[in-house]
Image (cartoon, rainbow, N blue to C red; front, side, top):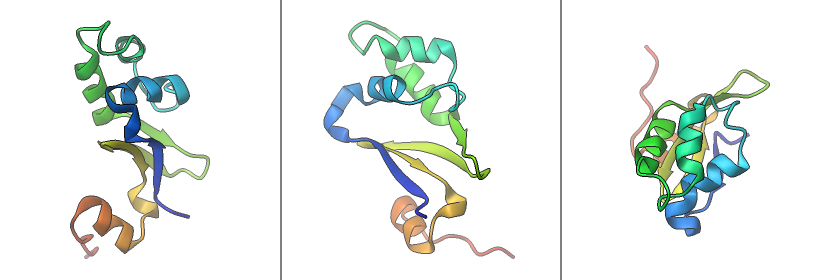
Length: 103
């Protein structure tokens, strides 16, 4: 099982945040109703669109049925990642550095 999943492709451009809140269960991701509301209208309808999206990226977490915690990362595409499930190669490619060895 991979520790990285593509959620929303970057071809959605400035609407990646809106697509996320429309297509994924934001309650399970722990996203506040206010942030969902701010992002749902799109950037042209909400002054706080980007601030709300940043809050979502910084705080959203999803715990799957196996107890693995997933977080969000966006660099064009929107990804869900779970460090515990990442191989060393996935970790290095995703974060651009080697995983620190446990002492």
